[in-house]
Amino acid sequence: MFKKQVIIGGTGGQGIMLAGIIIGEAAVYDGYHVIQCQNYGPESRGGASRSDIIISDSEIYYPKVQKADIFVSLSQEAFNRYLKYSDASSIIIVDKSIDVGNVAGCKSYGMIEYAYKVLNRPMTINMIAIGIMNSLTGILSQEGIRKAIEKNVPPNTFDVNYSAYNAGYSLLKSL
Amino acid sequence: MGEALLMQGNEACVRGAIRAGMRFFAGYPITPSTEIAELASLMLPKYNGKFIQMEDEISSMAAVIGASLCGLKAMTATSGPGFSLKQENIGYASMTEIPCVVVDVMRGGPSTGLPTCVSQGDVMQSRWGTHGDHPVIVIAPSTVKDIYYMTIKAFNYSERYRIPVILLLDEVNAHMRESVVIENDVEIWDRKRPLTRENHKPYAADEDGVPPMGEFGKGYRFHVTGLVHDETGHPTNSSEEAEKLIRRLHYKLEKSRDDIVIYEKFKTERCRTLIIAFGSVARVCKDVICQINDDSIGLFIPYTIWPFPDKELLSLIQKNRIERIYVPELNTGQMILEVQRIVFGRCEVLGINKYSGELITPTEIIKCLRRG
Image 1 (tube, helix red, strand yellow):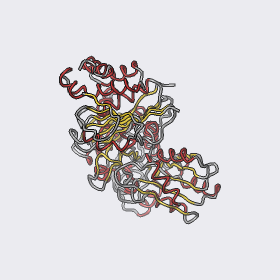
Image 2 (cartoon, chains in turn yellow, orange):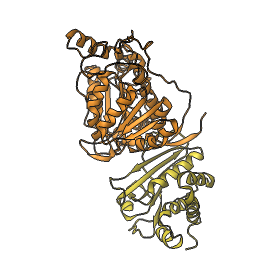
Image 3 (spheres, helix red, strand yellow):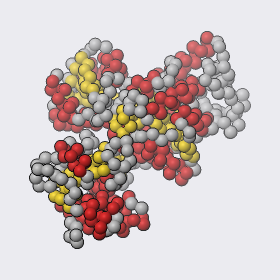
Image 4 (tube, chains in turn red, orange):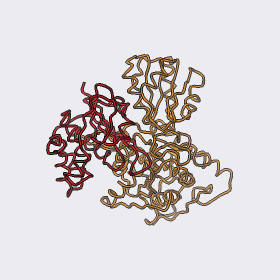
């Protein structure tokens, strides 16, 4: 049985929900059963928010992630708050700015810096994160991701979003 | 077979409503129901329908009633605080027998409570929120796919029985996105129209207890009032007419009760312990049943929580000689009261309650089952 549970955590405004929808939709294109859930506070900017995605080859009943196979965190607050959903077998991907303390094996990338300095588009950080996640885990097809990005971002921003995804997929080698 | 889509619960509600023939939506946005208004505002114009954002929930409900009186299938959507405001006009729709669908996406309460968190605190409000001795239909879907099809059912019931139908969602299944395949082959029911415009009595019921309904603007002239009225629609103080009207309002649902109730039995073939759950909690319980893999525990899901599938539950209790029933719900115990009423001491009924704003987990339920 194939089942992957993913948590994308960050702060309101980083596009956490959109990242969850794109991953979820790509998995639907790849033929999986998918559930995507959100968790956020009443504020629209700031505060820790989280998108749960469950991808499976059979029907999914419980809709929230219980143990993340993949945990991506784009903010310190989200890291501290949602780390409890991961364990030693989880793949943990964090932004370089996050202090991971004594948590071993975290994969740290300068996603925020890359979005600001290289792409000059802070809003593409979610796409970079999806790219890194898929590069390290290979759970989604490139075609599915492309189609999902195309469907969910404004047409005039597709190129910049898709190239941010690809930058992430190549693990930010140009930095 | 249709293509699989990743669809949000609130989106499924709007798509189902439009498929059922909704051509009018009036509302006032409130988390976690806002996407319903948002999407209705985008989609309705494409179907020649109308969307209005009203100044508040009271007027939204009034606008929906007005649109329905003019012949359109109409809906509004809200959450707890707004649902309270709509109650007076829901009672008016009930008394005047105006078809409409009211979506309540439950969030933590009372008052503004926890806007972005899940709850099942409106079970009793959905039944008894408006005053008076009124009948009601409340449907509580569990999955995104359920939401699509049960929104269609909600419209069908409201049209056929001329009654406000409450669609009870919760923050989890309304905000959740799920892969669904939608089949377009669905049955759509429309309200009965009077055979003639001349001398028609707007509240003279057919054998099924439901009067045919003309619409304003099409040559039907009639009076509509929340006061007790006779077949002509005019107010009356007659005690005979009052009793006749209230009896008929209840009769029209009782007569068709078997066609109305919707429920599911999940792995109940040999069970002696039964879990009864609705809404998002029902799917958590499916996970529990699959995890424990013990055929002595089964699950009963009422989709119409009002009217509750009482005959069906009783027959299962008797056939299986059920010894114990658990009722997990995201409140301090509301549906359990209805279950206890039906069970009437035939077996033990225990609640499993969570009201922190989070969805109950399979582990929490399993722990309660093991504790016994």
